[in-house]
Image (cartoon, rainbow, N blue to C red; front, top):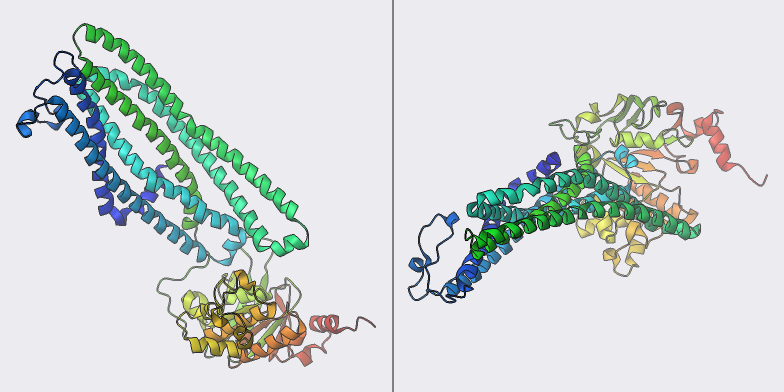
Length: 606
């Protein structure tokens, strides 16, 4: 826990002045609580004494303030009534304590929330910058649960609970001082039970951390089921799988309940332990005080001061054990968060990497080999060598799993090659900045992803600074302006999650408009029309023709009709080049391309 707590506190360093002020205010609040039993002593010894109910007796200032003066020398001469002094003191005490407690609590919460916000932002930035392999091995629901739910546990600890920890800690120190300055021997005997409380609590903390981690994993599983069921609601309904999804969610919720109940059972255990030992202590003290008061060695007021301080000591101790458990819970939740932050990225940018200016000559795949990080049974790409000249249109075709989309991902450095290199104008793409590399590449794929934003917001996603007329021009070139104008609010219409309010062809044309506005010199088309009907495909093909103009294009396609006009067609098989040439050359060679061509254009009726 110490390591996680230290790392969490490190995020609060930039707020050190505010934190120090809050600590000072909490110190005042704790001292105020410690003053209460001191003020009870004159009430029992003087105000409630039957012989002198309103005795005008000088009331000494408590010893721990190190003044040996009398209150009647510090306050106006006319205030001598003991009860008046005590009543005013109590009111002032609670006023000062309340003000210090309020502002101290607010400032600690401010520091805690600010630190956790910084942590959440850093975690998001780290995760969103990860390479594709990371997202393939981590589900969306679990990532969302970590960034939201796990950090929410941390937020509770370092904002609300940190304030309470400071408050209770200073209260414990103040009460302990009152006890020991009153009767140090009796105080020593009274606090001997604390180790019997603290040691079991510390052991419980480790179990609480494990149960918290388990509960958070179950919460992440529920988030994953929710994310899949909601985003795939059409599939759920078409297969009438509502009952199946309900069963999956119910089982995950039951597992979460069991983990949560285990945590609750462990967290609640210290409180009755403390109360029982406290009761034992009070019974022993009452027995001792009875004999001392009868013998005249202790006054009722002195006993009430001691007992009150002891009771007020046990309450913050009990609170501190609960706070300790919550910190253990936060430590358990932070483990997954720090795993993400500490994870070493596979695709990294070299320090001081220069920017890639653009494409002037060619793209060269030089003896490229690649194996996915999570696989070890052979290469996905083997000895791939290909040069794509500027302005050339090159098509990649081949059976599913032959490595076509993988090559596009390697060009954009979604992954790094295992061996060999990819060069743009002679520069290894691993030696230039990632941002400049990806600015040179526009991608349009079959899985069009649009954001729950306006039409204009989606088109200018790659160029937020683009003017309205530039957005409209890109939409016109993508043949999207006509249907956009028919939307309820035109370019300011929100299109729903993943563009749910649009048809497949409309979504694809918006993605083409987005690529046109980006105006990158290299264009990658990955099955851009494979999921469209004939009419939509014709419109998208016309839009793609506008997009491909004056650009270097790599086309990945299953439909051979879409690549007949490519300058070169590269046929892949098993991650390697098996054929290369124009459509006319390849269709007559009797190889893989001819077989694919015949399969797609065979007359099924014959």
